[in-house]
Length: 339
Image 1: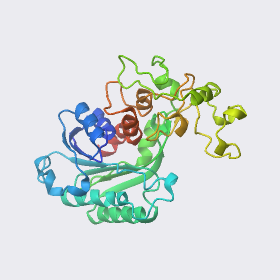
Image 2: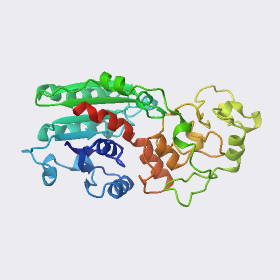
Image 3: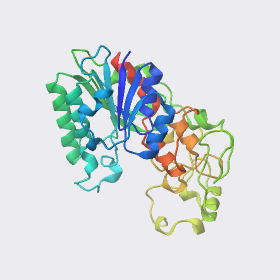
Image 4: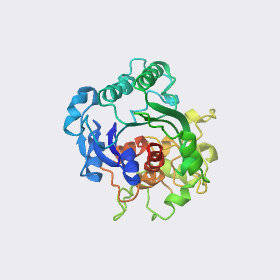
């Protein structure tokens, strides 16, 4: 059995994926209050540290981890990705979140885990100071004689119903070989699954409504104007389908960002779910046929969370937790890299 410590755990998508494969999650760390509540309630036996990693010393984990261990140890990390995403090209150079990979490096250097799993947005390896942090991290891996592999993958290639590109790094120490990412993709390559495959069976609800028995099956309310707009939007359509009088002023002579105010298509994967994945005006997050944006539960399903995984916090916080999460199915697939 492999034991797992989850850094920047968020609500626990990575932990759930590794747990589903048979690994034992023993610890997690994140500073977000609502994510911490979600994690603790879904993983009651796991020791959770609710702190900013910058205030934690590697030796502080001694109550959870042991340097002399008989069981292989895996560190996984998905540092907050906003500073590295291509959608934030104007991010300030001094954004403190860019150092978070270096903060994770402190724990790798001290504890020397047997395995490492790193997930982030494409770009962490080559954008300004983030590229410097990444090259420093790979230099540490080489110095400590880790075998490692990294690549940008499409989540839809391994069964996640989402057009979601992610950067993955897997590493293994002590002479163990790490299974190439390409082999994992080839093994689990399959036809893309669709929005319909994952959410069509959920009961209908209205904008602003919460289902009484299905956890987190709740949708944001819509203004009267946006309700009219979505009623004029066909499945897979967007703001270009509206009558002239419904169009937002700044969009009338602008052809970009056509996903905003868009509806999903039943027979295709969803677009990438973001931290605002239940907001109709922030992406192609409209339900394919119901006059509302998708619910938190629908977003969670499209991230491959099961219905018994409950999110805590208000709707906006739950959406942020879902959008930031590593899809559990993705983590589960890559668990095999370490066996």
